[in-house]
Amino acid sequence: MSRTYETTVRQALQMAQNSPTGELDPQILQILENYLTQLWGRIQAQPETYVMTVLEFAVFNLFRARAEFQNETARKAISRYWDSHTASNNTSNSEPQN
Image 1 (tube, rainbow, N blue to C red):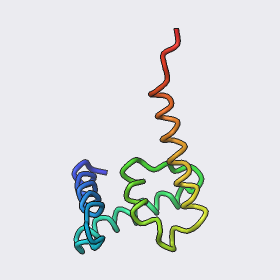
Image 2: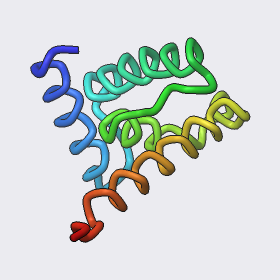
Image 3: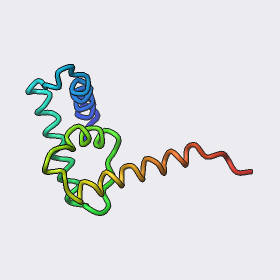
């Protein structure tokens, strides 16, 4: 994925998260929907192993109340994200061994 596309998705996500009414501009919604569709395809292709990035999780989290994501595949993907995120934080916060 290109950095330009990631930047566009990040900007769209920020606009969605900061929307005071919760309503999204159709163009912003389309950017996020396209990204979500690609992400869900990656998760479904590797339902037991795919670990979302921070950006992927943020977009997924925005839409996770949808009925199509109320399933075991989605729950496991969320769990793997948090497990990975927690593990990486524990590693970076650990004190050096002497």
